[in-house]
Image (cartoon, rainbow, N blue to C red; front, side, top):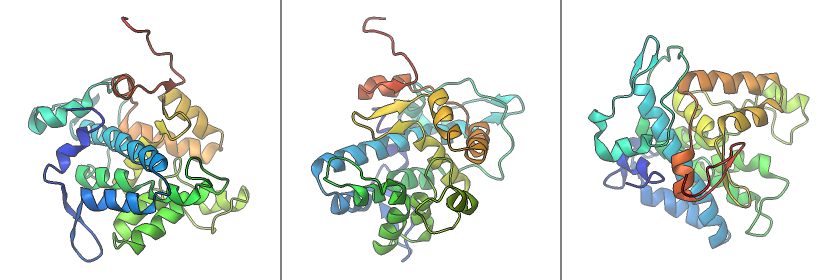
Length: 265
């Protein structure tokens, strides 16, 4: 099983069991991809955003699996119950984690993966030419929220788009920084929203696209102030640091903030 497609373990029949739209219909992989396709202004941007979404889903999948087995001193990963296909999502992920604070509940892996696959559908709305993003990129989460509602995905799924940017944005930060957003909170609230926002920090749709090391992601978030930095650190304490070497080599994408070994090493 490819690392980038490891998340498919949660929808072997193309359905995200238990994840419903606003009409109580089970959400399918085909429906998610069709939404991406309908919004994409070009094949280039579809490939870019869909690949990014799958990569974030793979990271989220591994983080969720890892959080399932926790002990007093940290995390103990037992992949046997998930089978070889699901376990492949853990390759290249660090097994060294900090002591974790107790969560109210474990993340729903199927919901989190589905959320990862839709979190960036609004990115298509902020492209100026079908090949890059314009200065309205900050709106892409809100645009995604509106498009998911328009497509009937419902509030639960739409919030993955609305609340994923960075470590989230508070109303106070919108006002203080004069951000061109309606003055509201755009914070990940549920554990599934949090793991998607956190996983998204480790891959960028830059040209060319790249993975982002934990240290680099931490630096990027810290530039926006103490609030975003504190929220990122809280998510890191919940879900752990990530080692992206395996999946970055498979995708042939660099890891920003980390020197990759040369061929043959």
